[in-house]
Length: 171
Length: 187
Image (cartoon, rainbow over all chains, first blue to last red):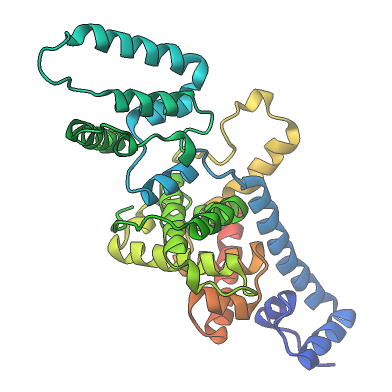
């Protein structure tokens, strides 16, 4: 009878990492050596333990992670409003957006200088808020794509982007 | 994580579809892999995000017929290694004190936890604690060999080392893990 197996041999055996001949030799030894079998069981139990632990600890990918990846690809972090929209959903988002839009409209005063926020912004905002898939390409209206988009809308985007990065900084 | 962020080129339709499918199919596995390496949600999140940005950038270099997951794991591994180099020592410092409150059993209060979950959480806690005491490489080799069930060859490809290194790393990691678990049981 060959001498007792080392734990390293048992670990390799357990992971199917031995050449065929060595594998067969370990198998044959385990058949007839109770103390090596006991040690093998302990190694196998550790693997089972790790698998059980991993299964119990398995988590879902965070819901916003996919959107974050896409918004990095599109060159912008999700805006603070988009983040809110993701949380609130249309039931709350639409009336709130409407209220904000109305308040902004009436407080602006007509014809007194260029408005600080243009219509494109509301379109984009509305699309973001009403969408159930807020970061989906098709639901995002980019101000630059709209007719009559002005420099003001670009400025607005920059403001939103910096607001978003400020929001990111909040732990 | 302070991974430097380069601007990303806008996607072609094909590239967008590739990434969409990659996240859909492998996002969860990648996130769990990252979490097992870091044991930290914020870092796992950043690693996953950065890994998929790399996937997106390098999508043409993926060879059909090879394992996509191994490719992503290799990316995560390299990112994690860079990050460790950048913040040397930080992960070691995060080993919880023995008396510190632990959060392994999830958020549910104990009173409504079914008994099986309770028993499992009692088993999980020493294991989670012991895994945190391994070096990042040791933890990773165990995650890949025992949890992901990768072959030594596949692990060598993911970790960028020889099969011999995988073998000796796994031997040492498991021996240490067993000792750590035993020590906790004796308490």
